Image (cartoon, rainbow over all chains, first blue to last red; front, side, top):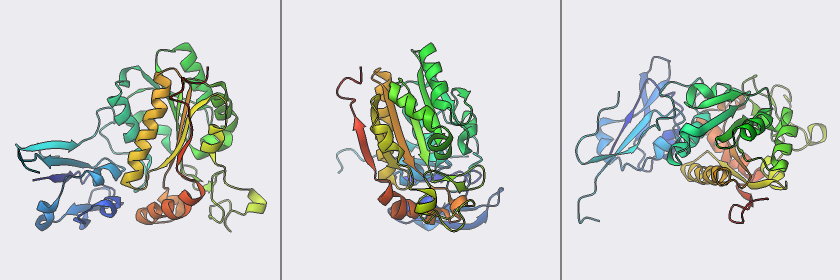
Amino acid sequence: MSRIAIDEARCKGCLLCTTVCPVGILVQSPRFNQQGYKVAEVRPEDRDKCTGCTSCALICPDLAITVWRSKKPKGGA
Amino acid sequence: MSPAAVKDEILAFDRPEVVADRATHYCPGCHHGVAHRLVGELLTEMGLVDKTIMVTAIGCSVFLYNYLLLDAVEAPHGRAPAVATGVKRSRPDNFVFTYQGDGDLASIGLAEIVHCANRGERVSVVFVNNTVYGMTGGQMAPTTLIGQKTTTCPGGRCREREGMPIKMAEIIGGLGGTVFAARAALNNVKNIRQAKKFLKTAFEVQTKGLGFGFVELLSACPTNWKMSPVKANQRIETEMIPYFPLGIFKDLSGEGGVC
C-alpha cells in the first residue's frame, strides 16, 4: 500500500499539497501543531487511496512529507 | 517521526542528505524551500556536494548556509556574482553557484550579474523571483508587476512613474558570455520538474567548463502579497507567467560554449 507520512512539527499548514493531490485525500486537519499551524492530514478512511505519486512531497516547501510506494506485483501491469 | 518502511514498499521520496533536517524560518507557502530542495537534490545526483562552494546573497535566503550543508561564502548585498567570480577563478576545480533573490540580483546587484554573465564566468546562478523585497517587508522591486501594491507603491506600480518590470532571464540570455539562460516556475508539479531540468543544464554547463548558467525561478511570497499560500500559488499562473514567459532564452550547451 502506498502511503505518505507528514511530519506535523514541520508542516506550516500552507495547504499547497492539497492542491496537487490527484486523488484529493489531503485535507486540513482540525489539529494545531506546536508552532500554531493547522497541519495537513490524510483521513484514516482515505489512506488506502494514496497512489504514491509524490506530487505532495514535490510541492511541499518544508520537506514535511515522506512518500512510500508499494512495489508492483511481478507480472502485473 | 516517520515510520520505517515495511516490506513491499519502496521509499519514493525523502529529503536529500545535503538539505538540513531542520525547520526553516520561511513563511508558510514560501517557495524558497522548494528551490533549496531542487538545488540539494541536483548536487547530490550530480555528485557535486563535496566540491561545491555556494555564494549566498542578502534577502530571505540569507540563511541558506543553515539549510544546505555546503561550504559557503556570504556576499555583500547584490555582489554574489562578483564574489563567485573570485571564488571560481581561485578554485577552478570547485563547483560554484550563487543563490539570489530579485531585490538582490535585479536591483542593487544588476551591474555585477550583467558583467559576470558577459564575461562568461564559469558559475551558475539560481535567481528566485517573487516580485517583491521579502525580508525587508514587501517594498517594490524592479520585478514588481504593473498594478501590484507594495509598501512603497501603495497605489500599485505605475508604468509611467516606475517603469516596467525587468525581465532578467531575457536580459541575461542576450549577453555574449551566457551559455544557458532559462525561466521556470515553482507553482505546480509540472513546472517544478521543468525547473529541475533547467537547473541541471545550468549546473552542467559549469561542470563541462562551457560558461555561465542562469535560471530564474518564479516563486510566491504569500506574506508580502497579502494572500493565502494557495491564492499566491494561483497568482503565479494567472499574473506572473503571462508577463514572465517560461522557457529557455539561450542554450549553447550543445555547441561547446562561448570560447
